Image (cartoon, rainbow, N blue to C red):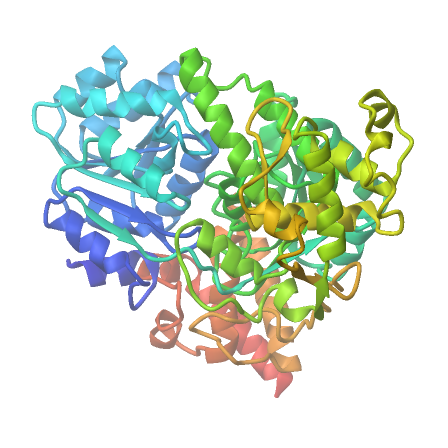
Length: 619
């Protein structure tokens, strides 16, 4: 069996996606490999396909129990024997799984990094032929990454302990150049093949809003997706509870997830969402890593996250099947304050020494600034994200709120001079809030305490709303006319560029939305499901829509019987292709993207019969 046969028989695909084949070939040739691919690009296949062709076991190092369970369940459904070894197993279950692994029953084993250096696992590894160590979510190894996990540093010690060094592969979705270099150095990859397929997710629509009533805006958005699965991310546990309770009271199918819940409740709530018993998951960033739920049609950030890495990773959980999906971020100024508090009181990674912790905090503040700029930019949102990760292209994508909202160029020189003049007058001693309160002429305790009412710029801009003033201030920082210190108090200071505006040698113009809030896109039930290579440019007829709903109902029935998530049976993308092809026999069904031999044997006849019934009814 070769890689193409494995791809078709077990996974149901006729061809590899961009980058997959190069990474697979690298691994099969015995080279260390690093793949940086966006969420939904098919990273797992890059180590799962070689695992079925190599002699020996592939160990997949994975950071979360939920990630392991999800991928192992999917592999077993595809007819591939796989297992996981982590703390969710009882001692008896762990010993049994390890025993079966030693007998060679599993070509793929998922293991938590904490297990690698235990005496029992070391004994197993010394007696087993390990062909490859695949490091999933590899950015966790870097202290500069957004999800640094000290336990990942044990991976190198484990590889060193093996008598024969296996191929080492590493995969991640979000990595800046610095993090990428860190992965190579820390994992000690030997002359690795390094491939970045690009960070763009063209099927995702990005939108940023700063609404007066975030909850109402969110509800209006959700109501345009009545039958879809979606995730709502909140910054704090308290907000999760409040939002979840209100949605429940308003009649939505919703559940919640955060670190304050018991292990049992988190697991039950996660299953409610994964098995489509709850349409909406309201959660903190504790939820989602490794959750391979392919039919999430939208991700809403009820609050702004602390960095672009986290935002793109979380937003990327929408549309994993390649079909269109929406990513909506609701921004408030308080989000910056909350994130700053988290950075200043970070209890993670206590193993780091004080100097390193301080450097990490400074990096986190810089990331927070860039995340904040994203919420205010008038440029293409997709281009902003891609530039952050080092990719450059046209500053128009046609699939984000900035590209589709009417913008006008506004001369803000007068406001910029007042802001810069205030910073100069106070000699750069105060933060953004004090500066903006001064130019607005606010009578606050801080303004009085610092004597800012004596500034010649006090009350210069009373008619400009605070959100608009903050947008101008952020623009001045982005353009290098101001800087904000990376310390606890985030003080605003002038730069060497400030004088050109202060002295009237340069005007300042910026793009601003004509409307206060960008309108939420209307959902067209027939056209919103497409965008993949399978169905690009095709819209459903009423008959196809009926067939899709019927097949989705059948999928739900089978999933309940098999006790697996519906998307594990077949993805929405596969059901979509069935509606287009309308297969009438085995050969035609196997031509459908996502239908492999094993799944055809389990489910093919049931779906063929349902298609025959619906076709007969429609005719």
